[in-house]
Amino acid sequence: MSFIVTTEFDLSQVAAPNLPLAQKEFSPQYQEQLNNVLRLYFNQLDKILAQLRTSGSIDPGLINNPNGLFFSTVDQTLAAVNTAYPITFNQTYLNNEVALQSGSTSKIEVSVGGVYNFQLSAQLKSTNSSGKDVQIWIKRNNITIGYSSRIYTLEGADNHFAIAWSFDIDLAVGEYIEMQWGADDTNAVLETTTAVAPYPAAASVVMAVNYVARLPDPRPTPPP
Image (cartoon, rainbow, N blue to C red; front, side, top):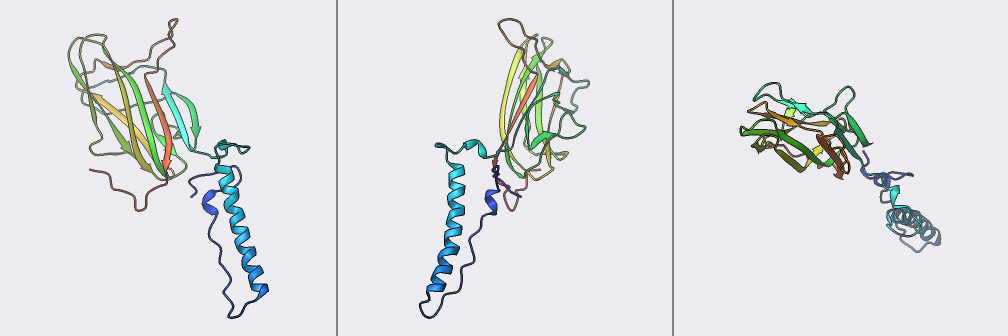
C-alpha cells in the first residue's frame, strides 16, 4: 500500500537498482552499463524531488494526502441516561480516501492505511438548570479504546459548552472510528443553530480527518 501518491506514480515504488557485478579488470562496457543503471535511478529520484518541490513550475498539489470533513446540521439528543449513543454526521464536505462507511452516518472509514489525526468540534447545550456530566469517547471497529473518554460538565439552563478535541489513531485499510457519547442526564443536547444575520449557522458536530504518517509496523496495542 502506498502512503504518498502523486498523479503519475506512487513514491514508494522507487527502489535502489541491482548493480552489475564488478569486473576484475577495467572494462569500458561494464563501466557504461554501470553508468546507465545509475543514470536511470538518479533520473527517477530527480523526478520525485521535482514533484515534491513547493515552488517553481511543479504544482505541489500533485501530492495526494487522504482527508475528510463531516458535520451535522441537526440536534442530537439522548433517550436514556448512562447509555452509549453514536455521534452522527449528515453532511460531507471532503472525502478523499476518507468517508462515512456505506449505510452508516457515524462510522468514518479510511481507504489508505496510516496514522490519522481526528479533530472533533461540537456544541453542547444544557436544557435545564441542573448540573450534568457528558462523556465522549472513541471506538475503533466497534471496540472501545481504553482511556479515551473525556468528561464535560454542564451547568445552568441554556448554557453552551464548546468541545475541541484532537487525537491521532492508527487505521488499516477498511477500518473505521466512531465517536460515542452519553450523560447522567438526558437534558443535554449536541445543538445546531440556524443562521441569524450576521452569524452563519452552527453545526452540532464537525469532524476533520487528516492523514499523518504511514501505518506503524508492528501496530501498537491500545489500552483496554
